[in-house]
Length: 115
Length: 112
Image 1: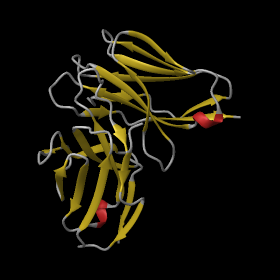
Image 2 (image 1 turned 30 degrees about the vertical axis):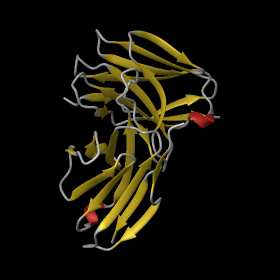
Image 3 (image 1 turned 180 degrees about the vertical axis):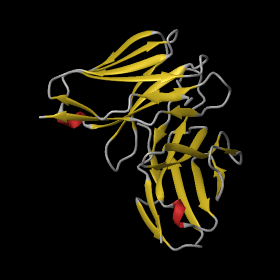
């Protein structure tokens, strides 16, 4: 089974703090994604990466950055946390293998509260 | 127009009944289609993938795809209280990247 893990289930931070959210997958997947999910807004893509050291902006990259130094690890960084970044953050991964449907597998999520 | 639209719900069905969820998409070139189940406070879990027109069955779940009409549906037969969740429809376009477009979800409640 694909296993995607995230560093924290719950996190509380102060406004202005630098926040690191880490995601690790154990299936050698090439693609990794960061989403946030808010009531009434659904899943929104923040950033994705299709290879080590590669990154692409999603729909809402402002206020976020990412790092992918190793294939299995994809980090989301909030440079200066703000209250409007309070949300559920979800990491996902998928493979480039031709026979795959490119389905994405999600981690358990991190519920971040910024005070 | 949203890329992926789902019937808004909530959908309430009695235990043992069939729950029917619909999803339409705007990109005619879309090639892969997924249904995710998300329990409250949890992350989405993949339950069905479908690529070709027609039906695909997996246990009590059946996914139906009609590319000409640009819709995909999910049927849950013999609905159980444990099926109460939000169901997300996701679509992958034909383009070279590997992003998925997600619908807003349909919340299903199965009444015991």
